[in-house]
Length: 509
Ligand code: NAD
View 1 (cartoon, helix red, strand yellow):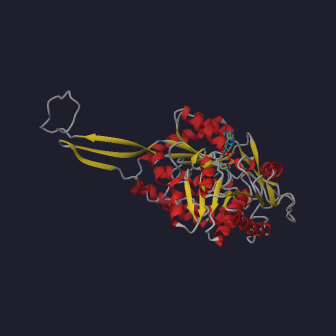
View 2 (cartoon, protein in one colour):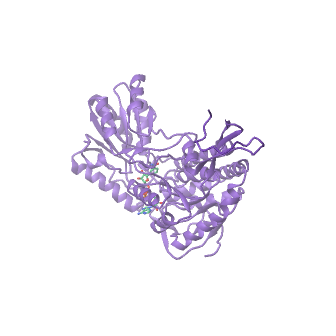
View 3 (cartoon, helix red, strand yellow):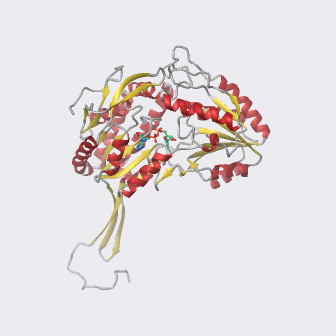
C-alpha cells in the first residue's frame, strides 16, 4: 500500500483506496466497480479492504485515540467548527460526487449534505454536551460525580442511499465525544466520504482519528471480529442490520443497527388535500423512493378520500420530470444500480400478479440519451391489500401503494401490526385525532401533516420494531450515550478525621 494523490472530484476515472492515518492509501488487491446510474457507465473502481487492511486501520486509530481522548472538548469543538467551514466551501464538489454515483438530483444531494452538516453543528457543542453530573457531600466530606468517557475505536457501516448524511449521523458525534472512528461506506458511492475525510484532516483533526475503509462483507466481518473495536453503528437493510447486531453483540461490542422501513401515511377525510398530495408526492418519489423515511404506503380512510388522492396523485406521477440528476429541472433521477432496478421492477410485476390496480405504470420509461441508465418511472398502485407482498416488503423505489380502509382504528392497526416501525405520519385538521395517533402509534418517528418526520440534529433518529436493533438511536442526545461510557467517581480526601473501620454498608444515618 502507498499514499496516493488527493481525490479529484472531477476526474472521470481512477481507483479509490482507503483513508487511513490521515492520508489516502492505495490498495489494488481486490477492486469493485462504481457506476454512474444515469448512464450505466463504470466511472471508477474502489478497493475492497482485506482483513489485514482493516487491522492497519484499527491499529492506527488505536494509537491515535489516547491523545484525542485527552484533548479538551473545547479544542475538539474548534476542529469541528473548522471542518464545517471547509465542508461548506467544498459543498458543490461533494454534492456533484453524490449525484454522479448515487443518481439523486443535485438539489436533493445538497439537502442530504446540509442535514448531515447540522449534526456537525450539534457536535460543535461538545463542551456542553459532555458536561458531567456532580453531587457535593454525598457523605461526610465525600463528593461524587459522573463523567462520560470515550469508548476507544468505534466503527460505522453505512448504506448507499445517503453517502454523505448517514455517515455524518455517526462520526461527528463519536469523534466529538473523544473516540477514534472507522467508516465503512457503501461500495456503490464511496467518493464523497473519501473527499470529506481529507477535509477533516485539513481542519486539524489528528491523523488516525477518522479513517475510511472501503469494501464489502469482508471488511465488515473483519470489523465485527476485531477485538479493538468497541462499538459499531450500522445503517442499512434489516437482514444485514440483524446480522450486524447479532454478530457484534456476540463479540462483546456495543451495537446500534438501523434497518429498513415501510412507512405509512394516513389520510383522514378532514385532511388538507393540497398539503397531503404535495407532501406524499415528495415523500414517495423524492430520491426515487430510496429513502428509509420515504412514504411507501398511503392509507386512505374512506373511499372518497382514496378516489380523490389517487386521481390527484396519478396526474402528478405521470408528469414527474425524470432524468439525470445533473439536470436541475429534473425531480427524480435513476435507481442506484441495475440489480436494484431489476428488483424494484419485479415488485411492480408482482403487484400486478397479486391483483393490485396499477394506476400509473412507470415500467416503460426510457430517458432519451440515457437509454442505458437505470430509470424507472413513478408507479402508483391502488387497492393494495395487507396480505400482498408489495405491502409487506420494503421495495425502496418509486412505488406507492394505496390501501383503502374505513376507519382510523383500522389504519392504525395496520401500521402497528407491520414488522417495520421507522416513520409514519397522519394528515388531518383534527388536533384530538393527531394527539391520539402520536400517543398510540407503534413507530419511532411520527409526523402530523409532515411527511418525512426526520428528527433534527439535536433530537435522535431511530425506528421501532425491526427498523432498529439496539437500545439507542442515531445522533442527538442518544449518540452521546452510545459513544461514551459513564464513570462515577466517589471521593474523600484524607484528613485528620478519618473514621474507624466500618463493616456495615455505608449510609447517611
Ligand atoms: P445494505 O444492507 O445492502 O448495505 C448496508 C451496508 O452493509 C453497506 O456498507 C454494505 O457494504 C454492507 N453489507 C451489505 N451486505 C452485507 C453482508 N452480507 N455482510 C456484511 N455487510 C454487508 O443496504 P443498502 O442497500 O446499502 O441501503 C438500503 C437499505 O438501508 C434500505 O433497506 C433502507 O431502508 C436502509 N436504510 C435505513 C435507514 C435507517 O435509518 N433506518 C437509513 C438509510 C437506509
